[in-house]
Length: 153
Image (cartoon, rainbow, N blue to C red; front, side):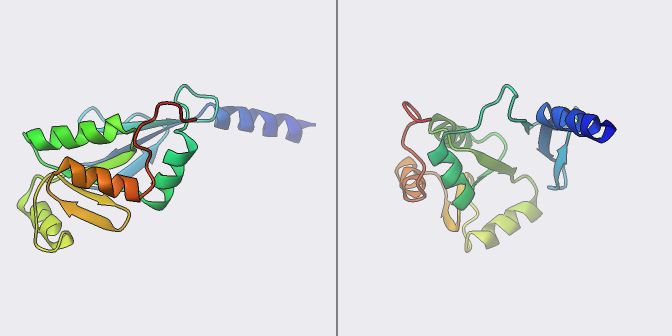
């Protein structure tokens, strides 16, 4: 009987759990049930099945599973803001990586075959350096992300 009660308590606490995800200044990704330090600018909160944040529509989840999106941005970059808005408007979940140091820029340049422009995007294995919204929409379409979220569930 005690085992059953303990199991019920554990399952209840798991269902209410929140997970915080953030990337520190060294580029290390952290997962925790505690909020990140105040110095962290970008974070995600994931809620359990009964939490306030519901999962995305099935088509978005499937596209994100098979073709995850990574956005590479820089500081004081109006095109980066436009790129971020495009992804958010389409409901595309993405990981954002800030390119601030020369070392990070060199790594980006190598990753994108000699083209170190920001913003840049990876959609699964497809890459595009720079921001041309038509090209970005085509990459997202090819990966199966819906053009709009209206009516999807």
